[in-house]
Image (cartoon, rainbow, N blue to C red; front, side):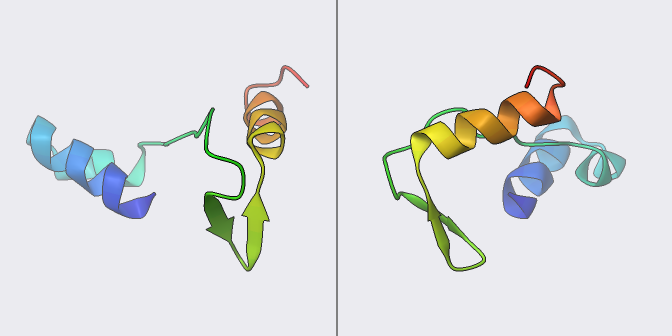
Length: 56
């Protein structure tokens, strides 16, 4: 995700965006994303996104 934030900052021509740009996954192939040794399911990603948005 850090790389995506850096790309957004570069495209905008504002390096300060990298430190304040969030990337939230809302859909993925089951087991397609691994973070800290855990392959997340689509449902887990949706639940986490809802928590981050205060909709849980």
